[in-house]
Length: 154
Image (tube, rainbow, N blue to C red):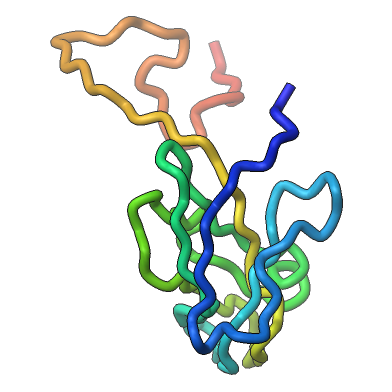
């Protein structure tokens, strides 16, 4: 069962973020915190933009913050985060900007204070590579893209 103790994350409001609400959970069971735009921008169809949030943060070592799209924006307007999930590393101290893309057919206006994405605090485990000459065999083997769940004749 996950811990109910919140993990402290230091956050700094930049001058253009003054007056905006800090990222917050919309419901008690929410995994993601809504983050707001600190600028006005219109995304043309097919366009991308790194939207300013007016925030910088110090994520604790051993964690990352993932930036994820808001499902309502994706469904209703085709607005998404192209590198989903985006990662904010614990050693980054610059402004959090959310890369948004307009997959829709119409220009999409973002106003300062609009909810643009979700932030999810996630523990990080770092890998330690162990180079070997051979890998163990599995039922899947080298079957790649689209190979699982396919019935083959014979």
